[in-house]
Image (cartoon, rainbow, N blue to C red):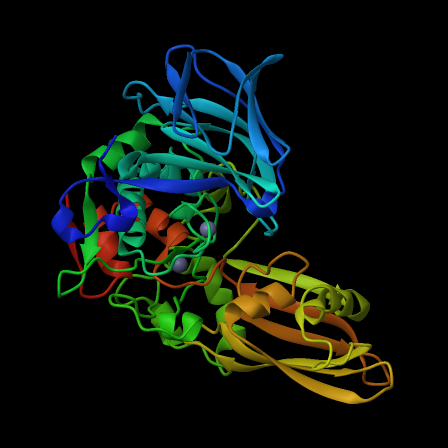
Length: 464
Ligand SMILES: [Zn+2]
Ligand SMILES: [Zn+2]
C-alpha cells in the first residue's frame, strides 16, 4: 500500500497517494452487505483496532445489530465492532475480477441509469456505521482506483489513446481536489457520477491496465505548474461550456470551444445563440458534420460498444423529449416544487409558459422562467437558475443536458397542450467531451493531441 493519503498529498510529495472511496453511502439506506473474499488472497479482519482472524475464500455478511456491526461467515459470528476492516495481506494483482466481490452496490444514484451491480474491489474494505446506515469505504492506491474509474466510465475496449487520455484527465481531476462533495463522510470520493464513477476491478481489461501503467503519475498542469481541475462529461453536443456559466467559477485550462477540427464548418456555431439554435440542433448539416462527438464520426453502434456497461441507451448527441402538459406539471411538482419553501412558492396548478432566458456559449440554458397558475388561479413567475437545477427540474430523473429548445403546442385557450424539448449532448459539457475524445482517438489522434484540443494552455507532467 502507498503511505501517503490523498488528503495530505501535494506536488512536492512525489509519490502515489492512496484514496478512500465511498462504495456504500448512507443514502443507499443499507443495513446488510454480502460479500466474498477470493480464494487466492488472504484478508486480515480488524475489529476496531483489534487484529482478528485471516480469511481466504470466505462468504461473508456484514449486518447492523444494536448500533454495532456484526461480521458473519456462514452461520458463525466472526466478530462485532464499530468499525470492521478487511485488509489484504499481500499486494493484489490488477486484473478483471481481482479482490473481494461486494454484492448489490448502487450506481448512477438518482439518475436515469441507476441500478445495482456486483462490484469487485482490490484494497482495504472498511465497514462503518453512519447514523442508522451502513457505510463501506474502499481504500486503494490511486493508480488502481484510476483503472477502476477508466473501465466504469467507459468500456476498457476503447482505443488505447482514448484510454490514456481518460486516465490522465481523471487523475488530474482527482489530484486537483478542489471540491469535496462529501465533507461529512470519512472518504475522499464516492463511487458515483457526482465524483467519478468507479467499479473497482469489475470490468478491467488488459488495455485499460496498460493505459494506466503507460501514463503513471501523469497529470495536466497549467502555466504555473498547478494540476488543473480537469472536468469532463459524456457528450458536449458540439460546443463545450465554460465553468463560469456552469458553476460560477473560472478554472485554469477550461474554456468553451467547438469540438471539431480547425477549419470545421461547425465553427459558425460558436457561440450557440437563440438565432442559430434551430440550425445547430436540427440542421441538415448534422448528417455530414466533422464534430468529434457526432454520429458522423462515432456511429451510434460504436458509442454503444465503447460506452461501457452502465449506459446502454440511445443517442446523446441529439435527443428529443415530449411531454403532455399534465405530465410536465407533475414532474415539476415532484422535483422543483417539492424542494421549495412552501411559503415562497405557491403550488403549481396549471403551467402557462416555460422559456429559456439565458444561455451559455454552448446554448446550454443557465436561466429559465416558469409561468404558472396556483389553485386560486393567481399567476406566478419563478426563475430557475443553473444548468443542474434546470436538468433536475425538467425530468423525472435527470435531463441529459440543458442545451435544448422548447416547442410548445397550445390548445384553443392558449394553454400548453404538448411540450417538446429538442436537445444536444449529455452532461454539463465543461472540459473534455468523452465521446468526442473517443472520436478523436478513432481518427488517429494521440493522447497529447486530444488533451490539447480540450484544455487550453496545459502541459502533461509526471508528478510521481
Ligand atoms: Zn460523490
Ligand atoms: Zn463533444
